[in-house]
Each structure stands twice: as structure tokens, then as C-alpha cells.
Length: 458
Image 1 (tube, rainbow, N blue to C red):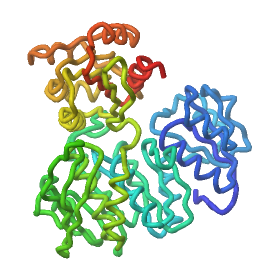
Image 2 (image 1 turned 180 degrees about the vertical axis):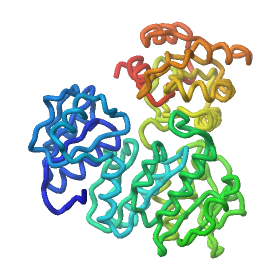
Image 3 (image 1 turned 60 degrees about the vertical axis):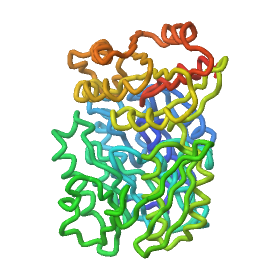
């Protein structure tokens, strides 16, 4: 089915409260479409969409599906046994995955930008979005997190520029139509779908093959054997890296007394630009290099781009400062993969504190089982670790593991680790054990942020 985005239609979103789905719904509302949908629970995103005119049902029931719907869009979390899915099939309604719908939307923009990688997609997309806006390009943005400068995850622009995150899970990004791509990194993840790292690399290779002859692939040269992914591509291939083995790279990295990262951005032409980042960590410096490289490829003013990055204070749930409770600084972070956890905790260690406490919510049984040792190693960078139960997300099989298994691995490394079944038990434990000048980080892709917000009275 080809969608005519200039013709108003009734589009129904199954899982409309998701960060990406809500963004797509917002774009349609701005174009005069009739938008409805459903989700398991209300949220700030569903509330925002309802204010903009969407009709949203809480709870997914067959009665939500009516025969006046022109197209149904569903997320990867929707399975064939879902009552709405079954009803759509009975009514023979046109259906499309979120990725397929996003891909069709991208066809409407001459300069579509897709930012991919195992880690850093939201931060890099946010940085690139800030640069595009500061450069007066009036872009449309679809961010996988809440960007404070646009007060949401979506920005409706009126230009040829469209920027979105591109996730490899279920090969969803293979439905896209980008002109510019960024591949930040490639590691093992989503092993409930992919067989191994080789299969993941194959997916990213196919992603690069989507680019047209006049397109550009910007890829991290530190990815092992990245040349295997780029050979025979018809588009232009440009690299970035930590060191000078990339076409674009950073040098002279140091930290100011305020905790800011200051570095020199180097271009293939030999031009340099000093950059100051207010978000911590070397991983964010590399994210910034990718965003700046994109800006240079688009012939944008690097001085303006650097100023845009200095104003960037991070997307929501990316080492986000939540507040202070009786002298305890509370942060929240979305990290749910060992590499992300390690990067966040290394960055957090540069902040003044007495003891670091991490409340970690493991995300999915398959990921926890696959990276049990790596999770234990990464979390051991904290002084004290508190574990919630595993957040199942889309999974139903616990694979015979629990947070107790991870707790035992961490204790074997000589670290203090605790596991509680309920958030209220965790909150009571923290109130009894954290002391002034401690740092507390809630961490995970589920709802663990509620613990810090509850402690702060949010």
C-alpha cells in the first residue's frame, strides 16, 4: 500500500504511546490526518496526542477497531494473537509495521537522515537535530527520547530535511529510504531476534545498501572490519573515529573544572573547530563527532554547529539530573546494555560524590541471560548496586533466570549488591542507607525512573 500523505485519512496506531509511534502520530496530526489508537496505559505522550486531537483507547480490545479505518500501523510488540490484530484481519483492513510506515514517510523528504547503531542513537540524533535547527534548516525530527529544546520527541518542520533514529531490531531499518546514514557502532544485542553478531553485521550491511548513488554513509572506523560492510556500496563512504584513522576525528580531549568535555574536531580538509560539551563522557564526544561530521557533509557552518552542541544538555533519560534529596544527587539513565552502562558509570565517576549507588532494572530475560557476566562487570564500576526484578517488556519466557543470578555474579566480584522485588522496598532501603553527598543513578529501559521520582516526590 502506498500512502498519499497529501490526502487526509484515518490512521489507527496499535501501541500509540511508544516513543516512535507517538512521533509518527504527531506528524500525521500536523498534516490534518484523523488519528486514533490504543495502548496498555496512559502516559505523558498519549496525553499530549489527545490534546492535539487524537482519539486514544486505553487497553487493546477488538471493539476498538472500526471499519472506517483506512490503515492500521502496529509496533514490533504486537503479536498475531492480539485482539485488535485479529479484528483487523477479520475486517481485511490494510496493515503496516511502524518501520514500513516510517519508511514511506521518509520518501516525502529529499534529505532524509537515518542514525543507527547499537548505542548512542538518541543522543546523536538529538545533537544532530540541535545543529540542524541552529542552522535554520527547519527540519522535521523524530527522536527516540524527549528533547527538552522541542519539549517532546517530535518536531514538525517545513523543509526537505527529515531526521530519525534507525533501529536494527527485527531489521526494521531496512524499510527506510534515507539519503544520509550514520552507523555509530555495532555490537551484540537483540539476541531474541538475531542469531549472533555476524547476523547483526549483515543487517547493517544491508542498511548501507539502501543508500542511493548520491547518498552518504558516515560510519565509525573503529568498528571491527568495517570495510566488509562498505565494500561495493554505490554511495559515498565517509568515516569518523576516536583517532586520526577516521576522516573526521577528535583530539586534545580534556575536562574543564565544570566537568565539561573540551576537544578539537578535525575535518578531512584540515579545518579544526574547538568544541565544548556539557554532557559527560568520551562516548558522547564521539557522538558529537558524528553529528559534526554530518553537519560538515551538509556544508553547515561549524561554528554555529559547535554553539548548538554547547547548548545541548542531553535528552531525557540520558544521565539526566533529576534533583537533590537531603544532599543526595539523583540521576536517571536509559542504559540497558553493558557497553552503555560502562560508558555512563565512567562518565558519572567524574562527578563529585562520596558513594555511587546504581539501581538497575535488567531489561528482557534474553538480554540478561546473554550478557550476564558483562552486566556484572559493568555494574561493578559502582560502589553499591541495587537490582529490581527483570523487566520482561515483550518477552514471556523467563529462560530460567532472575535478578538473583545477576546479584550473585556481582557479589562474586566483591561488590555490595541487593535485590528487592518491589520499588517501595528499594526506596525504603535507599532512604536508610544513602548519605549526603552520595550519587544515586536509576538505570534501565523500563520504568525504574519511577524510583528516583518517587523519592523526590515527583
